[in-house]
Image (cartoon, rainbow, N blue to C red; front, side, top):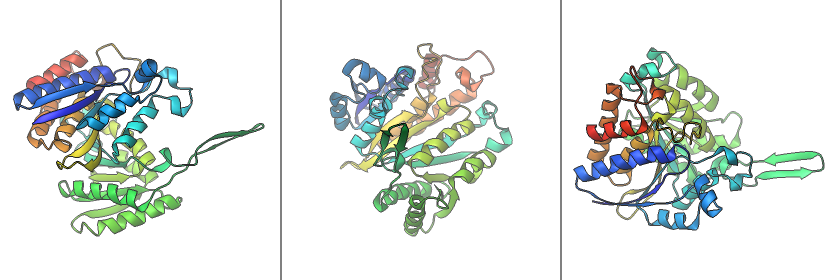
Length: 360
């Protein structure tokens, strides 16, 4: 198979973990006799430095032409106090909109070998295996009107949370479809006791559930969900939620996995004529500028994102399973970075990547 891939290393540790993810991808392609075409582009802070914009037109063109896009993290402290439209994160939102990806899939699994790396007690996290399905194109991040206005001494800020029936339906169908190959349970998260937006969310999700009679559906308020993720994470299989709630809850899930560096993600859009999903793949963690360039960032989230890309965008389930199995084998070996608190000396970013390639 020919794999046409765009790589956007991004900022901070993004370049380091992406380098190892690409090395694993090259190894997989060679083992299974796939051909690779890899193009590299600019996104985020590095793009602002070089072009003046977080999402340059050339990157837009490359993303539209690629079969899938692999990203590192974006964001740099020097942009923390600039206007939102001039921040690196604006590039991330822009490329999601460009590709039309509407469902972010974030698996959260507590590996048996890594239970001690979670700050929670082992009996709480053991057996955790869920996937958080977060809607990506609606909600408060994109709603209008928005902005900050000043009237004399008074300053007012406005953001608008908005959803349409069609936006909720398509991400709900994605969640129910995923549940069909898992434990057949969807938990929908909202704040319907306060927000009309969430009342529509709950109504539409309930209607979509009738199309999947073999899938169990329950509803939970977002504040209770945040608590249950810590107290009883094994109760969850597929967690379906809107944009902002999903942004927060999926990072909370990192506590269960032991480190935010462990979590991959796949942002999925419409199917191409070939039947493959349009996909944007990235680790959940940020750019971590405090450790950038030190060869100690955890690359497993980025490498896991390659596994997701192989499965969703290219339909290569055997290759994806091999990447997942290699990650588990390396975790059992203890050859991991310092954030996972290995029993011996921590491995470097590069050494973890090499270990994954050897285990594939």
